[in-house]
Length: 113
Image (cartoon, rainbow, N blue to C red):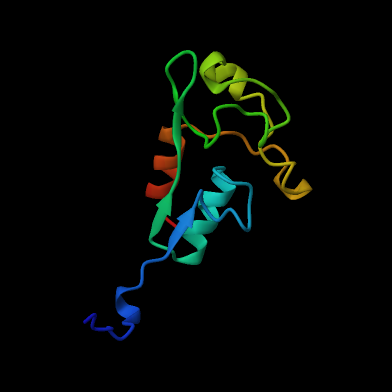
């Protein structure tokens, strides 16, 4: 017999999937900034490597879906990736958002405020 346990809200864990991807373009600094603003303590993201070995935050194997550029992340250098607009597809207020690097995300998480 399976015993049902009462829901305990103190054990509830809320994760921000690819940042607050409902409120800002996924896996951008804007999406992760909204995580900080919301008070959510957990986030999930994706990491990948550029052609020159830099760690970037990206879910897909290519930048086609979430930027204004095209190409496989493994075939692009960081300098090439940094030219891609990763925000305007979501909304004009996010134009200019870039695919962040892991150090940029860590800096944002560790920043005060």
